[in-house]
Length: 172
Image (cartoon, rainbow, N blue to C red; front, side):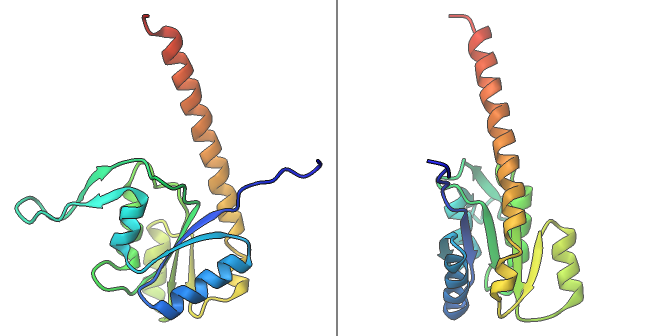
């Protein structure tokens, strides 16, 4: 009929606090987002296809495998203060990844620390929300998701064109 049915945007929510995770999940679902929630940065990295190298014999922990993510995530929203890996650390790993760097990342914190907010925004965060996150904050996500979707479509077109050219010019 007249309206094309589109899959909802998929948001990965990362927060070690069960209550905060449930709140952000409910707000996102109310706004018609598909949500996957995890309680740590390392679980987020595994879900995204980035696996941390935990072998102590080698250099400091680094990302050892950069596989294409199994699920398509359109945006990541993460708490800043979490044990083991902060939201800032997660942000840096995502922005250092070739395959994930274009995914918008939003940091949340209950602490209003201007230097922390600036550091996150300067290093690639698309937004910084103060907790408790409100529905009005969630409404600010859509422009970032649309921008991300356009980039994804551009990458897809480039990859398809490259594949076509490779198939045309490869000996049979």
